[in-house]
Length: 479
Image 1 (cartoon, one colour):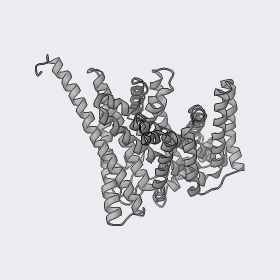
Image 2 (cartoon, one colour):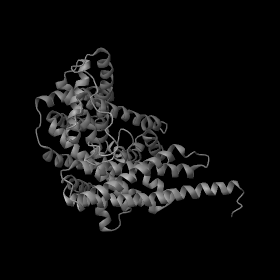
Image 3 (tube, one colour):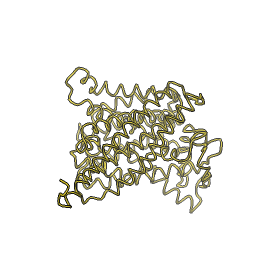
Image 4 (cartoon, helix red, strand yellow):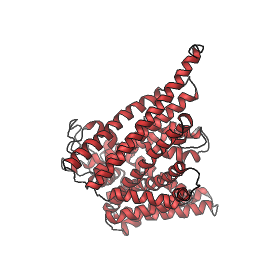
């Protein structure tokens, strides 16, 4: 479902002059649907920025060497951009040089770690994301993403090879044995909270490794504008998502190698992220790489993509809000569409969401919104196919759309009206600050209303279009 989602989001944007999914559904259903989807996506973007900034701050706190390596890696990307686009120097020698320096940054990080707390790192990450989001694409985004791809190949590819080698030859420092209970029941799953049911919460806890609405925004926001040819969409959209599934599998394997106890299950992301890097170091030791190097390297692999996602999200938020505002005629519209003011507001709201210091409710709200956005992207693709040609089958996008819609609507209703409102505010059983819960309830309710309105309009359009096709096939007897 995730591969279909990414592919149709990318190819749909290509067939509509690189426009966003909001513009696409607006073309077929109307301006109201466009505005609804753009507002939904914009609110989701703010949640993306908040949770990723939170996670990056935590990784930097736990792995100070990865913080140093990340700073160097960003600086190298800036220099690489100037090298390529300002001085027009050779591409291949530049790639060899800057990729080598990127990997060498891990050694520098081990020697000179930057030790700050998560609370100190979060505003720094948001300021970095603000700067990166307003810079031209060639300055940082393209060269950084290019360099980070080599980190991904080395991290994920190396871990997959190491798992096979370590399992067959037993060459790892620690035995590559899974130590996680397979199933703990449908209700009261301790990993997700004292009373969180496995359905639907599991399906909004796992995000980018399966299906992610954020990918639809990236596909139709920046990726569609960078392809050499339309046929590349299959490899980049469908194939790229399968690659991310491999990354998710490596992440699970890394945590499984270190092991999860009953006490760990309630530790949340504060224990999960260090276990990912530590487990990755154990896995890479199968190839003779010391765990003392492998763990910080895996932390760098993880944080490089988190940083990329954070500032890319801010940039996409800019684009989305500019589409919402439209032509800048009034003074208010000009301020709202200003890249600096727009990005600053997103960072401020994201920081307010993080300020409660409680991870679980924020991640669950983000996960629900993100997966619901995926359902809306599949709705957009289904509307596009239905209007394109009556011979186009709608099963490939329609079935995932229905499944994702049911799961995410149930999750949002459970989270906002039972867990946050009833358990949190009315009974007072939540650790999260009341104002933070109230803000999340407001955001979740708005997202739910926007989504239901979009589903009503989009499905109505599909029904009308296919109904017209049937009438035409019958000779227009009803007209």
